[in-house]
Image (spheres, chains in turn yellow, brown, purple, red):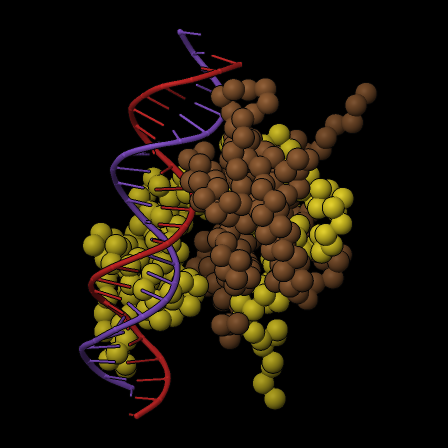
Length: 173
Length: 173
DNA sequence: CAAATGTCAGTGGTACTGAGATGA
DNA sequence: CTCATCTCAGTATCACTGACATTT
């Protein structure tokens, strides 16, 4: 729970404005996102540590948990996790050594591999998710409407920053 | 601009809901924050790299830039940057070797040190900030009202997750 | 005395670059 | 042939733990 006595972003915005830098709103948004990420990470890492998992490990396990067959090609994992392919190799290596995932040949592309959950991995993934859910992912004090609004606004930020394209999935003709 | 064809968070929420895990809104918020952070980081790192700065370096320089005297005690930097004291030592070491900051004795506590910008550091910090501002920090496509709303909502998240206390600075009697 | 500040040495983990083997 | 997929070796950076000297 560490905890500063007051919101550092607010003081920061005041100094920024006083100095006349301009673009204080985008600055405040970026600072808020960075700090929220760090705070939530710190909070949820305590839970992950009790399962001996790091956040990248968790992200990979969860990415597998919600797929038919619990199997995803390495290259897709790289995109979903927004990391370099060699980082995926590294993460999969570690999880495979622990028996939580395994590599299997891609059914139709002999260059590619899919990563799939083992029974142990699926069990672990489910228990970790349950633990995080029970803690509400560390998010507290917002109404459902606020949470929805937040997701929508962050979607705009991600879209504007180029995370993905496709503002809306054009309905078929 | 790399870029996925569509928003991965949306697909994720659908899978999550279909599996009946519950707490899908907090999950979506956390996932959105993590991805927004990563996307903005990737985007702004290109700018930082042109100044040979990493993000931790940037954070420290900017923390100094907006203070009277451009000097801040190490311990405060540790809190502001949300990192371990030894990480601050490390970051300051690197920036000091490059002549961008320097350590000076704390005026009233002989245990403590303050870190202050050199002339070169102040100049560098200003130019980096200007470059980031010119790019709007990678944030595009939101109105001022939306940006304000986003800052307010993220403040609630940070407060709820224990980043700081003090819901509102109780006005003096 | 106990608590706070900062450093040092060492560790573990992440994510990258560049090069290369294999297959579409 | 070109491009995609994945791995390996090497590198940089970060953030931490534990121990310590100094000062409050």
